Length: 616
Image (cartoon, rainbow, N blue to C red; front, top):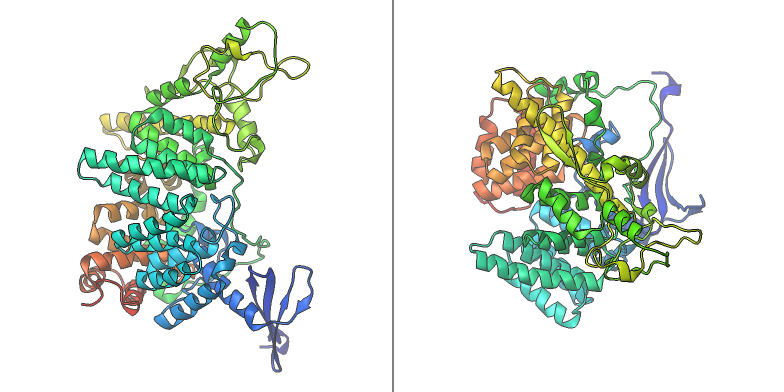
């Protein structure tokens, strides 16, 4: 090789999110090794031991945060990036937890998940990463010991201790920890929310209706207090809405959902890669498997109906994704028509608003109070986090006068009708030169028990309507084709989108049917991940193992050697069935040995961490 092809300088870089520094190691070949840091102004600084400790902790948390969940969505954002497990044995675990303990009370500096408005010492990326690590590896004893020590310094850590105790099936100790901590901090919203989450989960598995009712009543009390303790946090309001949904109190559930404070979704940083002149991503010999090798070439040539590509719910993230999930759960339980009736009972609809305005004489300034509103989230629609939602919903969700004066049914062309929701009253609509509204309080007799619907929630209803319309078209056409003994044809990409649509709408069986149709045409990690969730729920061990082997192989194919979700799946299987049985099932599959060894590697990690079920 010509001398000019050799690299004489190598720079290794890692970002320190605590101190906002770029830590670098500059290697000159042959020559010296220099370590230093570069701040946000581009100035060079000395790399101290404290900075290296912060950088190490950030790197481990980043490895978990940026790992793929098995669906391939994260891998496809930046192709060719190697992802590996930063904690492979108990020695590296001890180093990780020691660093976390030393920097724990500075964790708020790292920021928090997208649904947390204000990071604190127990709600931030550090605590999220720690809990995810303990849940993935099953190292609950290590987590309990860590949080026990930290609780002596700050009682708020009891919420994290309780979460790990609940994960480790030590529920009595978890409840006691929360009870003792709440005596000291009765209005700590994280502890109240943790207690409400636990009670809600126990209510869903209650053996009798009376037991379920009692647990939901206690969960309601905790969730209600948490909204008082933290009225600006989305998570507390969402939990309260979930409790009302479990209680089947639909009007209160919709009212509370309307009160959720929505804010902008902040995605993880993803570097913008320049357009490559040439791409060479060689296939590792140990990952060769015929059924996944053709996936990259075939997926880009498939035709997709425009109506499937325009479903906006698929792009929801953060608070909007959670709120939409609650809304679809309600729809799955009571149906779309009943949801529309409850919506019109709870919120002021546009036809009511216009009728009332016509009957009112002189205009007076609007005074918004409890009779027409509830505790509101963000007052301006521009903070929704979906920058086009409000503007687009104004054009999409506000049809012509003919459409808004009565509820209409939009035919899907195949015999299935989904009633289109009428438009709610616009909270910002005003009349008159001075911006005064046309409804004095004494004329609100018919509306004084209703609320004004937030624009973002009105937009969610329109998005849900589109999802249901497309879903109804699909199911109606499927039924017609089956009645005529004809094959219903879609491309693999379309089946994948339909599976995701059914999953969003809580139609599990239909989602699995679509995902299977996708996999019959080509390999799809997203479709297989969707089916894997159902296999895990049904405790279908052999199918779970078969799906996991293929997902692990696909991950390795794209240089991702570690997925926390897949490791958790293997660990759960070993915990339920035992290591010997799981290894036997893996070995009994008719796949190449080099492929099976990749999954055996995950099982070996469980043995290294002495997970439950590995003793045999």
